[in-house]
Amino acid sequence: MITLNDFELESLLCEDVPYGDLTTASLGISDQRASITFSTRERPLVVSCTEEAVRLCGLYGLEIEGFVKSGTLVPPQSIFLEAHGEASHIHRIWKSVQNLLDYTSGITTYTREAVLLARSINPDIVVATTRKSIPFTKKIAIKAVESGGGVAHRLGLSESILIFDYHRIFFPSDEAFAEAFNHAKKANPEKKIVIEVSDIAEALKFARLGADILQLEKFPLTKLADAVQILRADYPHMTLIATGGISTKNIAEYAGTGVDMIVTSSPYNAQPADIKVRINPL
Image (cartoon, helix red, strand yellow):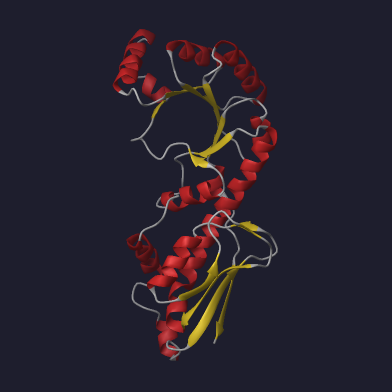
């Protein structure tokens, strides 16, 4: 599973505390001992980035009383991370840790719900997320997705081959594209080639061409189910992906069409968790 290194964690903290904590220092309470707890409120939560939260605490000398691993379902009103140390260090890490846990645990909880809904219909289906994460959050967003049981559809342009219409428009004819496609296949024998299609005619054309995977983009549900049935008849081993406009509201219906994978951006827009924080002097 993805982890953030110390430099990344220090950079996160530096956004909030670039020159120290003026309030805590001015009140003269920096050296007092205190504890800090992070807990759920009225709803259960699947947490993420607790390992990074623990490391942030450790960078400033806080001692950990206990924590749960990323991907753990925490019941309502339950403590899942507790630390103690000097008040100056607790106030320094407080909001950075809370924001990190709020954002990622919201994604993780949403992803877990999406996975459970989809697998209630098709136990073998894979739920994946797109490259459309919020800028500068990719690493923690992908960790959050993985903590919820999802996977990254593509980590970036460098490790996979996915051909869009905006690639194909550069070729003057189907024959010219077919030649380039075959060259790409021979040049990357360890890679599967994905082609995105928008209708069944395109799907059949590129299945005949030799695509390993078809990404069925924004197919209406009934047409998607029909396309899967038609493609399965002649290409039973081809991987079929549904994408476009899929969320927890309709993911079960898409899972029922028979596709192998569902790709969605919706977890990245999940409501952040509302984690409760308590600080008490010791």
